[in-house]
Picture 1: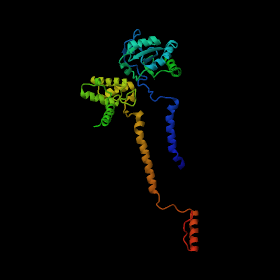
Picture 2 (picture 1 turned 135 degrees about the vertical axis):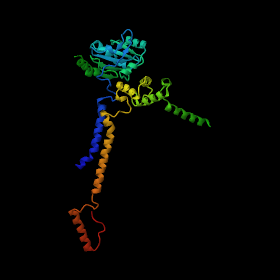
Picture 3 (picture 1 turned 45 degrees about the horizontal axis):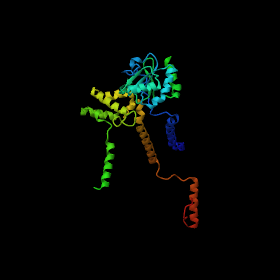
Length: 177
Length: 168
């Protein structure tokens, strides 16, 4: 019994190592933070459009399950997820609204002409003030907004096909029912 | 002063520069020194979400600048310090606070060191008590030890010599 007590520090050390190893093995990024807005109504905002697309405001959310994607033409990871968003909009029929974050309108329009426009509505957030309302810390970020206009999920960084298959599509199906 | 010394002095001076530079740009500062002071104090409480281990007061990130301006706008609009912090945490969560609030989900963070120290102190107290309670005399001899001692004594009695070294 006494002998076992001497092994206790080793056991505690082992437990700490295991606890720290988990995110390394599963690839969970500790910088991935849950949004403070989960299950809360989308913030109050109204943004002018990015011609020719209409603008985006709180009133446009709700009624249907939609994605709200924060993007910018200067953002390289946004370009990386762009084909995936395009596929979701075209093939899965998912409504994707966008907030064009801290971007010059001409640059954003040119970018959409070059890479295609999967977005239904686009709000131009030139000074990033609406980004702060949504608790955005960078682009791209993608929010799932349900039929009641509530934020249900946030993805920081570019969406990946694996995330979409494993999480996003099942969540959208569940919310759409 | 030799040219070399001058060079070293200039180098040291240049090294001093960046260390004391502030992220707060002159155009962000408020004219009212009292408000600006509160803004600086609040900015030091808020985490920059891009660099994560810097305050927005220290950070050069774009978002940090936006948040510094936002803090100043709220103060000018008449918000109290707690209202400003509440405004930012409502959007970014408690994570933006560099000093985590004491609430149920942070109890482990705040009190674990205290609990661990208490456990340590308790362990030390128990150990000290055991030490004190222990008799000062050595443990009594086992039967084998006693037999060994008696054999030695008997040997000494017959030879008339003390054994040079007790066999172990």
